[in-house]
Amino acid sequence: MGKFSRIWDRSRDGSHREERSFLRWVLLTSLIFILAVCLKHDNVFRWIGAGATARSQEKQMVYYRRNIERLEKEVEALNGDRDTLEKFAREKFYFAAPGEDVYIVTPEK
Image 1 (cartoon, helix red, strand yellow):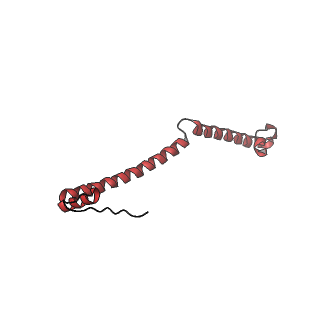
Image 2: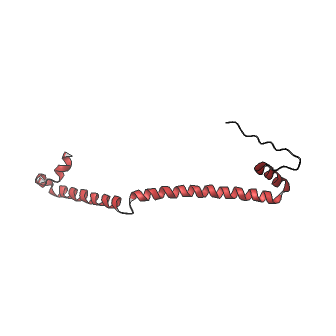
Image 3: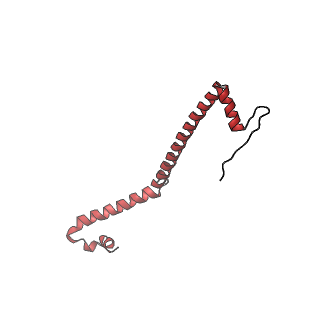
């Protein structure tokens, strides 16, 4: 903190008056810029958060597009073949033909 406080002491300027004056100007301008960027409503932190949200939503969009494509293929297969439809009904909804027994096996934990 000692060097920083010496910058503001004009009695120490001596032959480096212009350099120290420029340094003070740069420090004040930088401080004002940093405060403006960080404290205004649309600040850097909100930009970073918005970017993270956008990336997350893009990942979700890719996931749902893939899921939609998979489901469309499944629907197409079910509409086209009776055997596939029967297999789907038996596996997903445990359907059985009259007189058949259905055994449900669950994996052990």
